Image 1 (spheres, each protein chain N blue to C red):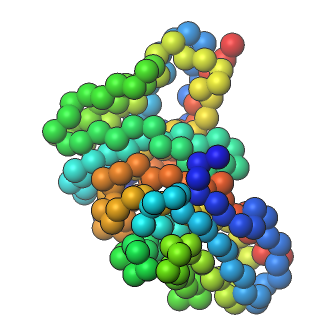
Image 2 (cartoon, each protein chain N blue to C red):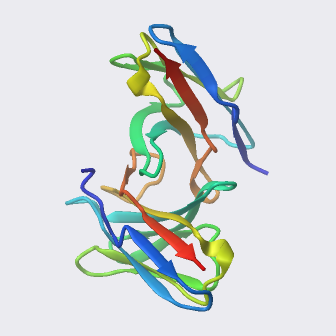
Length: 110
Length: 115
């Protein structure tokens, strides 16, 4: 069956450091992979989309990589700030529409 | 404000009842998607409409139904409610039909509590 796996444990990072979140998937052949940010009680906010033929994509302090051989995407936030604290979700187009991982809760410590 | 409007924000109702959740997509978007989010299940895709027609169906229960109207707003109807239906219900929209091709714009959700 199709699975998207993100680290369910909270990730604690010191302010100013780079935070790296991992998204692994099985039984998908995605043409696109997306990352979202979700704050408590709010709707997810779209951050970045990366295509299968793109190795890396950047947007301000965010960087996403996509390795279709490893079936993995890495999401980096450089120079992290307490305001970056949130849950980050990856999403793939699958048999049941755009399917989301359960997300990784990121906490940036001042 | 994302441009996607969901009403009501909160809903408390009893088991066995029926409720209707409403979504207005971002201006110009033709596709509407409904998702359910509970603590243990994460975001679960329910159904997609594109320009008034059903396009894709996910893990939507038979007690649930949806439609998209000519003005492109959508309604999700939940009937014979059970305690386990308590969750956040999100609506999202995109400009066109293809899933995964565009980033989704989500509304702020409707929190449904069934007592």
